[in-house]
Length: 210
Image (cartoon, rainbow, N blue to C red; front, side, top):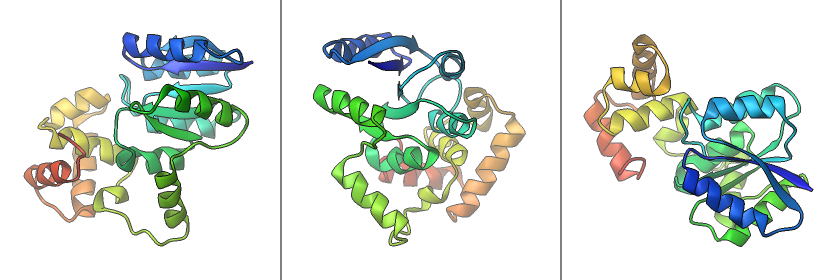
């Protein structure tokens, strides 16, 4: 039996995932989490085969949490299931240690297939993502400017580009204003920009924010 932890901050989504996975005889949803601290706690307290994780949840960055937990020793395998487009987050998630990546637009049978494959020790990505990952590994892809950013810098970029102030970003991410300002300075330098307006224009053009 594959024991799954479903982590999403929307109760309706968690219920839907439960219903999809409950239709199988070999998968058991043994618990739910609605925030990243709750995911961390339940991973430490229980034994899970797969964690189906939305990376945009209260309490920080889901990608950073995957990286953090993977460094602590034997952990569940993570399937990132998110509303964010594959081209924005997939490579970051896989680099952090996720075993698979799916968008929430995927068909239910894809979710079941992904959970089974990951639980068996495999990886689950789309054909397009597999090609991108192969190019990255081969050193053939230089990547867009925002791909040079750390995961935290990328989170700061998204929030600043959406119109939030440094203070608001600090509150959202649970960081100090000074730390966010440092991230802002570094990401501007990496992207060869000087203002938030430039960041916003870039983010909209590249579908990082609406």
